[in-house]
Image: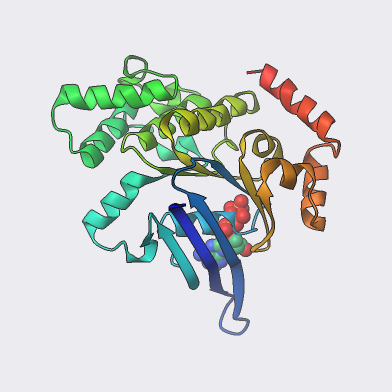
Length: 279
Ligand SMILES: Nc1ncnc2c1ncn2[C@@H]1O[C@H](COP(=O)(O)OP(=O)(O)OP(=O)(O)O)[C@@H](O)[C@H]1O
């Protein structure tokens, strides 16, 4: 197996508090996992607020340095990505999607600007027709088109549509990995499943792996191939989604699941099917 992403005993500590009550907060503790380069998958990180999900995502994106441990993307240490060119190469392979699509786009800038500048920057395109074509292709992957988006502003679209545009922008460079941090939590509940379904399509049609960070067990249950559950910085469960979410063993994950989905997997799947029917 050749690895797309490897995390080896990754830890992140923060110094918190003031002069007199300074202490160390262990935000991420001994996290290890590997994503296979040949087997695109949806790898979900579940946990409540403060469990260390975002810190893990930020380290994968190279926006945060681990206190100890190693993160490698396609065999190369993420901490070794230093020069501007190395950073651009890395970012064309690993793209983020953030929680709030309304914050991702300036309300005074047309949305196509973000897509065009991504195509110019990452694909080196100069010719307008080529920029348009690359933009339209990415938008088609998320069920939109350049004709629908051209000249539009963020306030003219719903959160779900904006999040699709954020996904299209992430697709333009041709990434191998998308790190999506709570991508549906600001999206209307009725549209959530359509966004997570999109991730499945990207995995299957484009071979993109997705790290899906969420506290929402029902979407996690539905789309994930593998899941880790984090609690206070520790990974308390890890494995195939149906095993981890269907039959949690750790006390915390059992409590988490019963708070969100009924314990009976048949009832839980029926609820999920009901949600899907609403799409
Ligand atoms: N820059 C920082 N300085 C100090 N503490 C931090 C910093 N970033 C995160 N933390 C702390 O690390 C812990 C993990 O935070 P993190 O954001 O990774 O959790 P999370 O599971 O993503 O939660 P949320 O869903 O609320 O974002 C929290 O206790 C948080 O307060």
